[in-house]
Length: 282
Length: 261
View 1 (cartoon, each protein chain N blue to C red):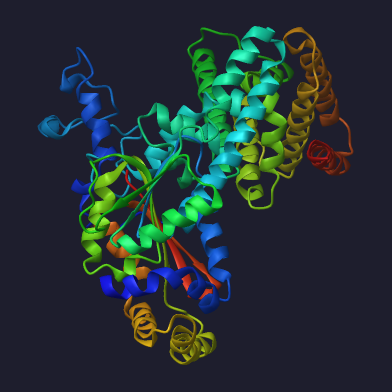
View 2: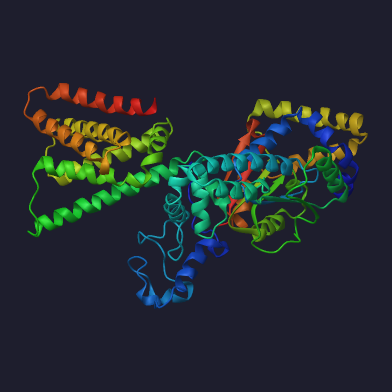
């Protein structure tokens, strides 16, 4: 339930935790306030109120000195991830996360009781990590410090890297998938999935703007979803069966490009992706 | 206000049932469900005289604690018998998981009725009864995880002071929950509701409790209470964040929620 942030005229001095966070950071040992790496552009003349703890450099819709409610929520969710292997993707995990930040466990009431936000936050975090990784790789290639990978290798590595991020949470991941498929979560989860796939294709060097773009997107989505499902049931050492499966699927993708049944493939890939999702739920 | 509740105390629960046709129980259940307290939560229930919210809280936390213990047992499959029996002992004596509820009310009679009810229903652990004024709570700062006030805040003379006190005694991250009669937004329902309130309730008051005036006062205080959005703004003024409300029964009752962030 997204609630619009309060108008800027609200008296922020009344905030207890949001400002306190910046005070706590002020007490960190051995750090002069001007050297705080708490984000771009901390203003030195605001030392008395503590440096700006935002991660994005923006203070949201409130004053620049305090983090916004949303940022605090992100911090709680990040802290909660540590408790997921024990409690699952639930309000309990969020409550434990809040406690590690010095907040009451009642703060978990800010979120939906089924843990949706926690999962979406995690997925979004993974996607961001993946993008950064791919960005780094691209830089290295541009600087000539690394070889440009062949397309199939690139896709395999990207999907593998992204799926490996699930490994610490793999036991509770089926639960997460089923929650992501709930009607009220589908728009967000689908959005995250498609933008992740887009990212991979973007860094793979895909410049096409014709209908092939849809095909590629759908195909890779199918590959990702099916590999994810295989991974959930894989008990081989370091998931080698999964990566072998992935290799075969990516090889199929490469072959598919050269056949004439583009449109049919799109349909097949979409169905494959959806079937994968349906199987997980049932 | 004090005298109204002095006379009302003994028949309070009966009147609630008859006035709201028993729906008030559902409203209170929804409130505790929304709170979703985990074991170890410290709750302050203000104006909670006869203990309805407190008892529900205890039930909820007890059930949550049982589930927690069962989960733990499942994880303990590969411990030695010695270790299992040790952890079993320490958990068994802690059936509420250290959760506690403090019921605070300005009225001695209401607290008395509450204590009797608790004894009668078998609630002993994790429950305390304190005499106090919502505008000036006898507690230290940053103490409680959750502050609830169910059908009490409309009887407070200075609502802003009560909200400030609520803010003060809550821990950082703590939650403020208020269950209260509010404005009905549906015009048809509004007319029926008015009819019921002014014609039926005082009559019930006279018949069941022998007190027309008190119940007339109650109905009027409901009408005087600020509507949902206005009350939300008041809560924000006290310093709470993420303030939101949920209408129950088309606005006859609303649950307002805010966090001390």
